Each structure stands twice: as structure tokens, then as C-alpha cells.
Image 1 (cartoon, rainbow, N blue to C red):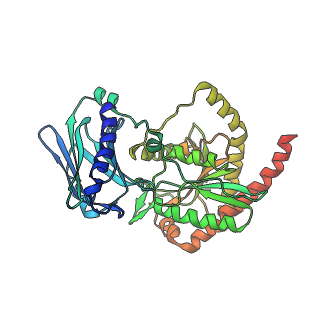
Image 2: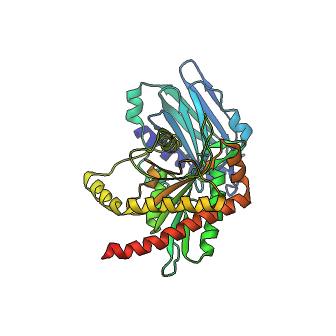
Image 3: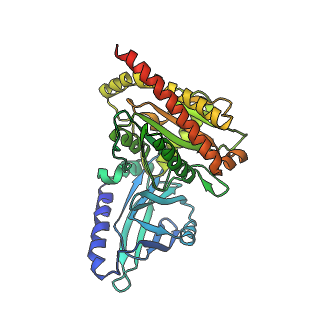
Length: 402
């Protein structure tokens, strides 16, 4: 990690040192071209930018990845398509990492160390070129050097979700549109899960706010990447009374149809639920963040105690949501109540559910998700489910306090 820390510092110093001679940096930098070429032993990466920007590079293990972060740059489809010509770099992910920053993740077919990296800025035009050379290494050395940078501001992006101004008696609801930025989620027919869920979350937010009973915040309100850990932290920071994560799955084999609601459990209700949770976790991992389970023993006991209260409340919420959705849109998945080990549901003291609105891989579900009339009915069903749960939970709260 010593080399990577130096690269981070060098990236900022190179940018600052050339800023005086560069063109006006107030406009958004653009990726204008680039190449990734395999040599006999090494792989050379070259990225052309319209202007110099702060940047950093580091590596992550399991799977092997090289991660490049830039102050926000616009990505050109033609330029990015030209990069995908290397056998050693087997996949490339790029997109918004958090507001104002862009991330490029190079998935490696073998362990490779960053031998050299530097940003050159032309003093006349202001255009910049990032040159990086990757050299082969062994898995143990790669693992020893890999890891997130220590700077928490870089390594732990937080959702922008301050506690909303809430009237007395209002419940604070955290809506969590799944995926975003570098992680588009499921895709079909030119549609990204991340975009659909953000659109639906905004519509659901408005429906809930119009009741006057709820103050609503969102883990993201733009096409940006927010880690699973940061989504949970945002709910806690906002003082949320409940957490609703929104998704739309896709399956490679068979046909699945209709909405389902998940609650947290270490034991999945079926193989499909376990596979879905693994895909969600892996999307977070491949986007450049390592998932952590760093609760010490005392913290784990305290969280288990908190879940003695929140877990049954989450299950009750899930049941009311299924009823509300069924009444509003007429049907749900054949097994609508499920559970799995989703990290995004692990806020110990907040009733939390994950709603799969449908399947992008199923034609009718995809049509529904694109239909504003259907989405309005779905939003009304979720609102009705939350209404029913809130009334029941308030009555049970009185009993719990006796």
C-alpha cells in the first residue's frame, strides 16, 4: 500500500502543479480516448483526458482489481469501447462513484501490480494523459499490497441523507433505490435497474409525502454509486423509523413474475433468494469496495438484542406491504414473502425490508416497470402497506411499553 499512497499524493500534486498552465478547469473533464495493450509481460494503460484532474489508483483483492478514481469526468462511449482489447484486463466498469467523482475498475485475469503511473498535462492545451504500467506478480504479493486507501472520505462514500424536518408524529422513511453509478444492476432491453429504481423511488417519495404522515429521505437522488454499508449508515444518520430498499431482479434461466418482499435472515428462504443476495453483495464488491463484517463480539451481542425488537417488526412490515401491493396491482410473486442475508437490511434498530418490484428478465414485468400508471398503482400499494403497518406498530408499541 505504500506505493498506492504515493500515487494518490502524486496525482494531486501533478494536478496542482500543472493547473496554472492548463485550460479553464471549470468545465467538466472528458475521457477523449485511451488504450489498454498487452505486451510480452506487462500491460500498458493510457487514458486521454481533456484536462488534468485529481486522481488516485489502488488495487483490491478477491477478485483482482485495479481501481482508478478521478475528479468527475464525462465518459465517451466510443472512447471507453476502445479500451476493451486486453486479455489481462478481462472486464472494465466505469461510472459515477459518488457526487463529483468517477471510478474506473479494471478486473484482472491474473494478479498484476501497478509498476508505474503518472498524469502528464500539456501546458499549452491543458489536455492530460494518464499512463500506467501493470506488471505480473504473485497472488500473495498482490494481496499484501491491496486494500482500500486509509482516507475515510474516499473509501467510505456516504449517502446524502440528513434527517428531514419532520412534524410531530411523522415517521421518517428511508427509501433506498438499488444500485447506481458504476453499478447499473440488472439490465434488459436497454434498461438499467438503477435508473428504474431511482425513478420509482422519486415517485414513491412524492406519494408518501402527500399523506402528511411521513418524512421521506433517499439514500441517493442521482445516478451515483453508494455502498451497501453507506446506505445503512445513511438510514441511521437520518434517524429513520423504517428502511425500504427498492430493486428489480433478472434471472438467466426460467421465468419469474411479480413483486416480493425480503426481510433479513442468515438462512435464505430458498436457493433463488440466496443467489440474489450474493449477486447484490458481489455488485458492491466488484464496484471497488470490500464488504466488511467487522462487528466485535460485544457489538454483535448488542445488535442481536436490538434485532429481537426490529426483526418481528420487519416481518410485519413485509406482510402488510405484500397485502398492499396485491390489492393495488392485483398480483404478486407466487412466494412473495422471503428472507435472505442482504447487507443492506442489517440496520439492527430499524425495521428494514427489500422490495423486488418485479423481474426485468420477464417481458410483462419490464413493461409494467416502464408504465407510469402501473408504477403509480405500485406506489399506492406500498403506501397502503406502510399505513397499515404503522397503525398496527403504534398499537403494539403501547403494549411493548407496559
